[in-house]
Amino acid sequence: MGRTALVTGGTRGIGKAIAIALHEAGHQVAAVYHSNSNAAQAFFEQTAIPVYQWDVADFDACHAGIARVELQLGPIDILVNNAGIASDAVLHRMTPDQWWRVIHTDLGSMFNMCRHLVEGMRERQFGRIINISSVNGQKGQFGQSNYAAAKAGVLGFTKALAIESARKNITVNAITPGYCDTEMVAAVPKETMQTIIGGIPVGRLGSAEDVGRTVVFLAAEEAGFITGATIDVNGGQTMR
Ligand code: NDP
Image 1 (spheres, protein in one colour):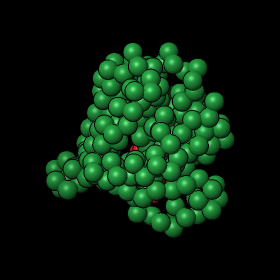
Image 2 (cartoon, helix red, strand yellow):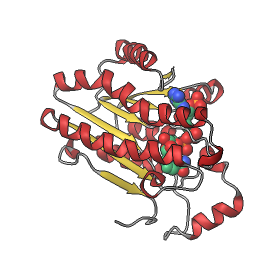
Image 3 (tube, protein in one colour):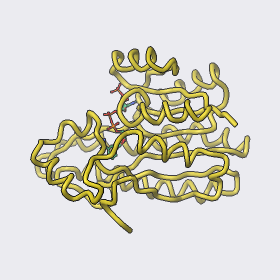
């Protein structure tokens, strides 16, 4: 059964693959972006998936944006919190702005989006919330105390909301991708990347589509017994 899904950061990289995968699985999809209008326009022209612009770090903007999407597409039953940024620096050089921008965007957005959507899901007794964390939130990473803190926070948030929502047929799960071949990772120096790939048992970076497939699996009606889980999509980098 097709439902309405919203993917934050859905116009580029991993989010784009998630939006396309959900669309191909029969869902109606809305994709949210922040400031790269050219990428959003190209995405819309390629997929015909409607795009919406707002800042997921802004609580009121999320409220207004969600209201706009629901007016046009109907109640949102599937939420994928994928939007995220990195702003790397070792802690002794990190500015407060670098710290808070990442915390507000990568972790604050979880609250900003879920707070406005979970009440409707509770009333309708159905919801699928999928939060994109990171392998670096599990194991830490040099120069990423802000990002690792935010992404580890996503895992705790996911479990707590999963417990609160379980009796309402709302599942809340996290995906922890390893390094995927997107623009975010293109910024990593070549030598560092060779070392990273050397530590991945399957011997390659992940693809955005690897994550998209996992989202479709978790978003399915039949996935109702999976909640509070952290699904690693990392080529075997961290086997737990
Ligand atoms: P990209 O940088 O390629 O794309 C990020 C997307 O998020 C863009 O659509 C961007 O919009 C949107 N976005 C960023 N900030 C905001 C904001 N404040 N409000 C609304 N939208 C915003 O990222 P990736 O595809 O690489 O990463 C996607 C997610 O996966 C992130 O959460 C990331 O942390 C996580 N991840 C990525 C890994 C990787 O290897 N790439 C590994 C592990 C986790 P716009 O286009 O307008 O800038």
